View (tube, rainbow, N blue to C red):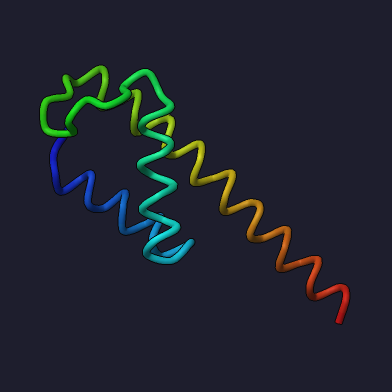
Length: 77
């Protein structure tokens, strides 16, 4: 996987969750996937696409949770 793509993914998670939680979420998701402890720069194309897919799904879940939490807070006010 290209390092710039990895950095972009990390930045996206950090923007939505904050620096520490975003970094932790990406690393935990990567480690629990089939990729495991493999270095980012030695992933082949298939592994790179798989990891990107898994991280996109996780990002969407987090984003949807944040939106739902915001709408609940608005209703309470």
